[in-house]
Length: 311
Image 1 (cartoon, helix red, strand yellow):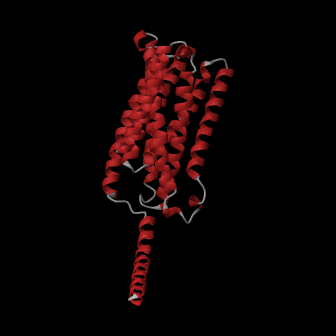
Image 2 (image 1 turned 180 degrees about the vertical axis):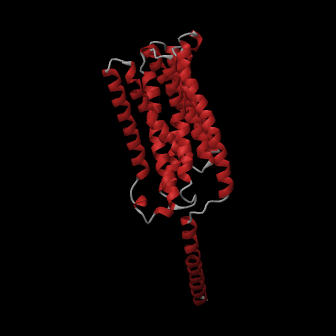
Image 3 (image 1 turned 45 degrees about the vertical axis):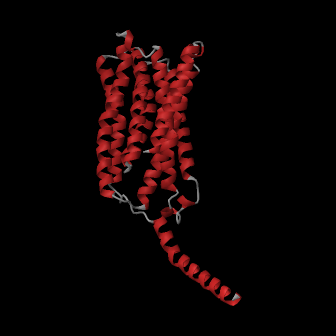
């Protein structure tokens, strides 16, 4: 009786081992496959969102630049109103959650894919490194441009210099959106970039209004800024046409650009939007405004983070 149990156990063990050996290669190959389900459908849907993003971000950037210029004539539109503190806090929350909750995890998925295990991409945390370097690079561009701007005592001829600092990261994020073939990633970037361009445009528009340019120069600078991210999206669409959507190259390109975008968005939300306003004496001396701004920030992050459940 004992011998029969031992034999049955051995037989069961051998069968189980055989099944594991048979199934294991299939499991590994399924993890390492670079195939994308419904590739043609996703690509068509992604292209629709990209074209929509070009139009939406173009309008957001133009509106942001125009607001300070119109605010000098129409007080109700002035960015100095208290309500803009809360709107900016909400927008910063949206941008921050987009970087941390949506874009950065996508970048990790791309650059830690089993398809890239045989290359250096699987042996070094490139996602965090690229995000960190893009944030540092944005800081350097902003500080050098702003320093040059201030050293020249707000000379109107040195305002393209300031614009260059804004333009560089806008183009990079635009390329990231254009190179992506994921409709979910594009949708979240669209919301974040619309806010980003609107408030970057407000900052640039305020500098332009202080310099008192002629109307033609104002129009040229506003148009140039408004076109930067849409131009980046167009470049990204062109870049994505040079490789197969289900290849390791696609994973690397999208992963690197998503990492860079996440770093830039996180920096812009924390430094350009939140730090500047939350340390503003006007907000710190008004408890009601301070509470409203903090609640708006939490609401923005909550809304965008909640979307990660479906996007």
